[in-house]
Image (cartoon, rainbow, N blue to C red):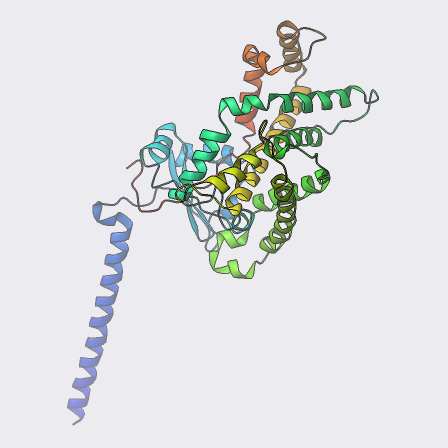
Amino acid sequence: MVALLKLSFREEVDLVVLVLAAVFSILWLIWKLKSNNGGTNPSLPPGPRGLPIVGNLLSLDTELHSQFANLAKTYGPIMTLWLGKKVTIVISSPVLAREVLKVHDTIFANRDITAASKVSSYGGNDIVWLPYGDEWRVLRKILVSQMLTKETLDSFYYIRRKEIRNNIKHVYNMQVGSPVNIGDLMFLTIMNVVMGMIWGGTKDGIGFGVEFRNVINEVTRLMAAPNLSDFYPGLAWLDVQGIEKSMKVAMKKIDEIFDRIIDERRKIDCAENKDFLQFLLQLKDDGESKTSITITHIKGLLLDMIIGGTNTTSSTLEFALAHMIDSPEILNKAHQELDEIVGKGNIVEESHIKNLPYMHAIMKEVLRLHPSVPLLLPHSPSESCVIGG
């Protein structure tokens, strides 16, 4: 009886060992397959080693585009970074960028929407965050083919000319030696230009210029703020930093302003000099089922144009002037070119731009050093894809 018990115990031990060996063998096989994908699907690109849980988050610099360019010298033109629980692939060569954005453009058409942007885009119902499909194609056609054509933009030249001249006059009339906040001045100028193109500016008794500017600044700040909800999606429901809550407050204000503007525009019957909002409202009312857009789509498009056209331009101009003030020789060359092409005492017109190569070079260099959106908005593939081998 004792011998039988000992034999059974040994058999059990052997069985346990056998099972454990089988389990470890399976796990090893799975790991091996994942590491080299069986030789058919390549593994993730190389990249800097990250820390547990946080990945590479703590090693990121504020000048991301410069940091990624340096990392590419070590890890190559395609590399992997772990931002919390999010795996991120960084492309830093024209050849691979073409492969992603042109050869496989449909697969990479979608974006990885952030928690803040989901609120600011009315649930992803704008041209930036809307998933690739019929709705997105309709909005893109409206925006690119009908709203942002050369003819349409040229028709709003008088608005740009008026706003720029008003602000030049404002600076000219200031007391000599008074400080000028270039960032605020440029933002206000461009905001007035964009609002004039979108809904005719601040006329018709809609007095919201300062209020609207402040809330747009808040939305932009919240969209750019690092958010734990994006790096750790499992924590998104907690809204640890309160970014989603703050964005909802800001968007409520924007929504109220949009509603006031839309109600005002519906009362106006203007056949000539239509602004973008009038065009969109007419398209909504007259559109067929395949090309119909909703008020939510309209609001999303309007906000895209405002955010995309204000902070980006004003910050670029501010950087340009800061660098020229810091480099007097560059500022003098720019003055000299303007004197030769435009003439002293004359005002710069848009028709002069094509004849100002040095100013073009300055702006290109500023955009290289301080790109408005250095990493673009992250693409999110709709299926597995092989890039660069």
